[in-house]
Length: 166
Ligand code: HEC
Image (cartoon, rainbow, N blue to C red; front, side):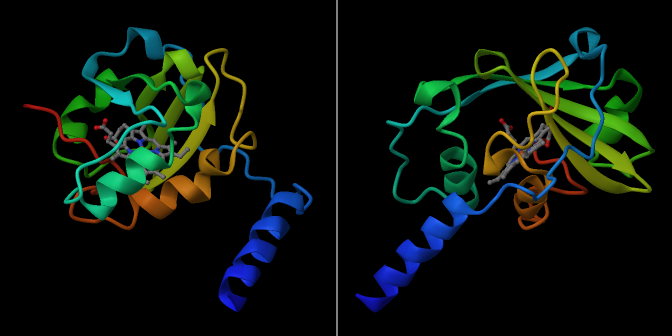
């Protein structure tokens, strides 16, 4: 019971804490993303999604972190790769500097960006107009992106998680 109460207090603190975290996008916005080749058309799941019980922790976290988008209705998710970095993307690097790949959830008005700098992945969240929206929701902050993309190292390698067919 006490544990439950402190979890509530913590949740309350999270909600009421002043937003001075300055979680601005670190990766930049690629203005020509619409010209980049599509490597996958996947989806963001809706809030009523029930995953099989044996779904991996990684899959569950990836799905449930973003069911809030598009009013919980889910949306298509398109992955587009910088044409100059296609080969690097297929092998998960090594990555040269610059924007590497975007994931676009058009129905949610979100463009996720993964860029590389000195071989290190950096992240950003924008709307389709290119305005930084990484402060709009805790799950859009670059630190949150990093926490997942950097944890499951057998799946996300050098900051990219999907592996396209060669
Ligand atoms: C809980 C885990 C998780 C979090 C948090 C997360 N991602 Fe991802 N990300 C994934 C998975 C899984 C994929 C592969 C999705 C697919 O294939 O449909 C992916 C794919 C991507 C892609 C497509 C390129 C690739 O292969 O990685 C981009 C770009 C991306 N994420 C950026 C971000 C950004 C920016 C954030 C933070 C706002 C973020 N991600 C947060 C798990 C996560």
